[in-house]
Length: 481
Image 1 (cartoon, rainbow, N blue to C red):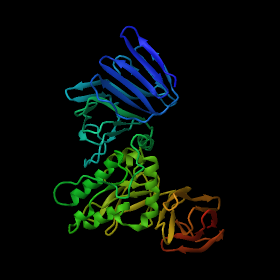
Image 2 (cartoon, rainbow, N blue to C red):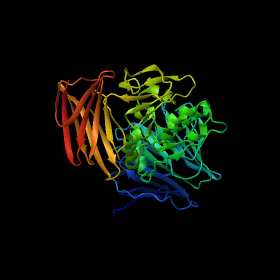
Image 3 (tube, rainbow, N blue to C red):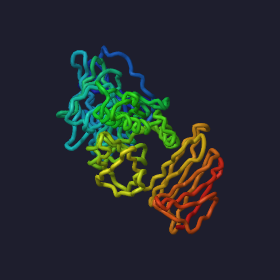
Image 4 (cartoon, rainbow, N blue to C red):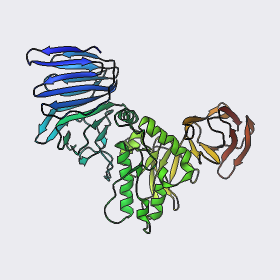
């Protein structure tokens, strides 16, 4: 691999680069930029007595390196990293010059600690930093101590501190990070621009390939289980998801015998470890996505709808995957306000469709309110036995990728309006029966294709289409309404 060396005569410092990144000789130490991908990199600052490490993945990336006055610029297809040659102070921009992140000062030592200072732009908000119980989703204006140092910014980037110790964040004025009892500075920078893109980049550094259905236990609120502690549990789920926790778990048994017991069981039923079998097909798909792409099962509103400012104010509701909005009832009244983001949403209990970008009042005395987004396909049932129901919410077209744990393959289902009819399609890798449920549509005037049974539920106005799904054989049904 070609390595190029440059010498600064005035400072007697050097820098060199190859396809993995660049290294800088600094007064009393060194600095290193090592690329993770064309949109992400590690920044490491060591001093003369710093310990070795951390062990980082080796990736070759196409980029250009050039001197620009007192700095070096490393430019990929997505980002421009400007490094001060003598201090290792960084600024990261998009290739068009728009600044994403800038250090306010170079990394420095303060006794046994390392201090990093970053600038925050006007209007920039940050999320993550562990499964906290704070009512506010945003972290700006807060002081936070954490061992889960993943931060997401509305500016379109994420940062992850590489050490395994404790970090103190001060976001009251700028963005200061103090790494406790550390002898080197090191962080990963991820350019998104969207939160899901950031999670995928983070998975290259902290993969979730060994994710298990038991999930990650959330911290418990001290004291007796109560409505307040259940509210805090939901907040911890949301903050945890924004911190890269793939699958949260809490102790629902702790609520046994309390007024909140039924609501705690309902909340637990939203997760693979909760024992609710009707979500098995849905869970398997998103557990596979978490393992392969690093995207948490819980989608906080700021991650799913990053341009919707109302999502920043909702720390008591979240999405499961892309399709289902969950609004747990966290009070004894049996009702709550629910914010519906953009789109149209169907209440799964009542089958009533609601327009988005508004708040509605929901009464749900005996179930947890769930809403499906227009254009979604939501599978219900167990993959290992019986019939898998495919609930489709038109008018937009939808698709879903069913992960088959017995074969490690993906079965695909698609549905969409096509002129005067609806088209539903199954490409199954495992032989089973399927039942399409097309919401808010019917009855059918004509059915073309291998449907074994068709019926219209007049009370709920849903059209049911039963189909066999032989392994390795595509099946298409066209329905004229």
